[in-house]
Length: 129
Image 1: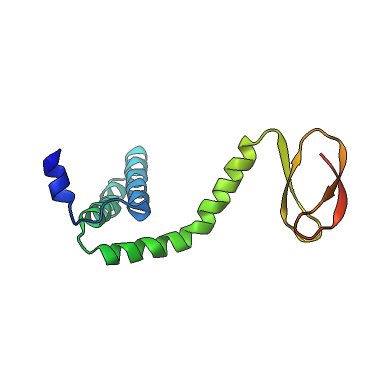
Image 2: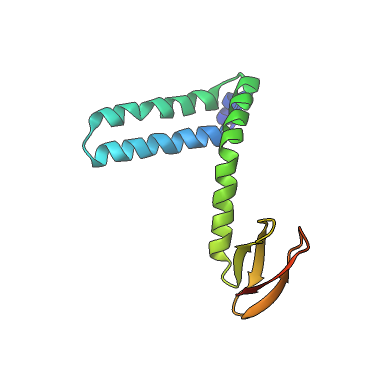
């Protein structure tokens, strides 16, 4: 294992963009093999090669700026999916929006009609949970 530590010293390593490229390459390979389209399998080597290149690169500042741009674009997608997973896993609460300011509210399930005061706009309204 010591040889691997010596080899990777000064190299960038794996980040979110490299992981996304790896997943994309695997998906393209799998899709190409399932539909018997060999050209797609060959195209899948491009993101896999980029993943390896980025991981072994010694130009750390350039790789960090590439990852920063990727995360700037993908952050809304990640935060949206994280919220959806949280809402689906939270079985004791119901999520709804305030009719006045559209803020996301978490209300207890199964309480019938309740009076809700929005913590953002301080308006009061009645909702059925």
